[in-house]
Amino acid sequence: MQWKQHAVIVTCALMLAASPLCAKAKSSPYVVEVWSDVLFDPSGQVAEFQVADENELPSAFADQVKARLQKARIEPRSVSGKAVSFRTGVGMAFEVTPGKNGGSVRVVGLEMAPRPLKRSFASFPTDIARVADWSGSVTAVCQVSTAGKCSSTDVEALPGLPESARRWAAETFRLWSFVPQQLDGAPVEGEYRLVVSLQTEGPAREDFREDKFERLMRAK
Image (cartoon, rainbow, N blue to C red):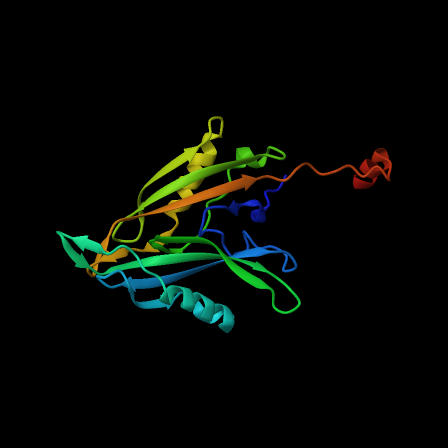
């Protein structure tokens, strides 16, 4: 049995990714994830921002992202009682519904967190890959260091989930890197949460239109 890459579905807000792992047919609604680096001034208003991979987005779509960022406000951050600037990653998840006239777009997720810079997935657990029609989910929480790596990872899962799935989530996060958040210009530790649903393919279906004995003989 072969594990399907696209069966790995990231379901947490802002890891609903526009990647080969989560791609859907263009005729159906699909989710696009857009990250930006945003600097909030001491009053909690946006001072500057940069949309990551902006050149890969349609200009009209990028304009929508920028318009939303310009209106953003947060509770002012402080250090030792003094209001300071806060630089952070802002992730926005958009559900795109295709249509004859360009379709529609709506925000379905919003989060402030260290911005993912490098994302890849560890090899899928072989013991799970052998099981037909298996599904499960894990929640992994990465403590992002000031160097942009996971200093520790806490993996939560429902009882009965194979230990290999927990290890897979932890190993996956070790492959990631982030742009750390900053307070008053200095990098600080942050937290990134990821919920991943995993699923394996079912067994191959028998073709009853042809005699099984004939198929076996022809395969020799």
